[in-house]
Length: 242
View 1 (tube, helix red, strand yellow):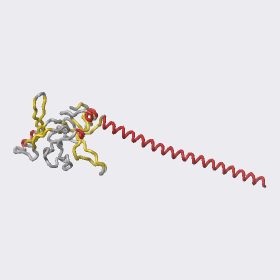
View 2 (cartoon, helix red, strand yellow):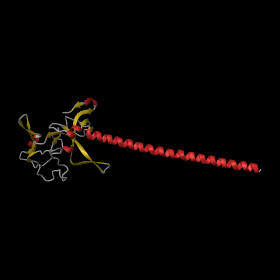
View 3 (cartoon, helix red, strand yellow):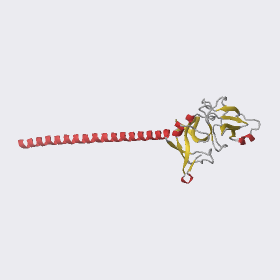
View 4 (cartoon, helix red, strand yellow):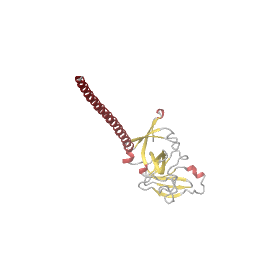
């Protein structure tokens, strides 16, 4: 009987050791699983952050894909078309008269989720650069510049003269664009909100001081995001933009 008790006690001790070893193995496995999940989450976060950083770098220094929204550039560009827009040449180079650009206006923002403010982007044509002169007479906006040794006085929307025979409240005297002023206008001149929405450099609430979001006027180079180069979608409409 005593021998049996001894064997029973020995068996119990052996079982206890086995159970303890099993418990330790289970703990190690659980710990490895926890580390594996945490490591996987960390890797996903790093990959996502890297992807966002790459996109930001590409959009800030290389190119963007922009969708046309609206008809202000008819018939040069159509609503819904996708554009290939270069960024580096604007950031590090010059913007020339005649360039089709992506830009934003003073005090114009869009809301994401109702509380996140993002800049509203527009596609327009740069019609006047630093040193050019702009003025508005009888409701018609004019750009004056030198070309091939000749002075050109180009009316941008001469049909408006039919409605403002005796002058317009928006008329203003000639203004020479400063070294960081650009005048942008939609090709569809009679259906475009652009730099022409301005009462001149001496008007109160010209939009540049935050007092009137609907007024635009000249914009700075920092507001020009990129140069539109190609229409890349739809496939049947692929073409260069000039």
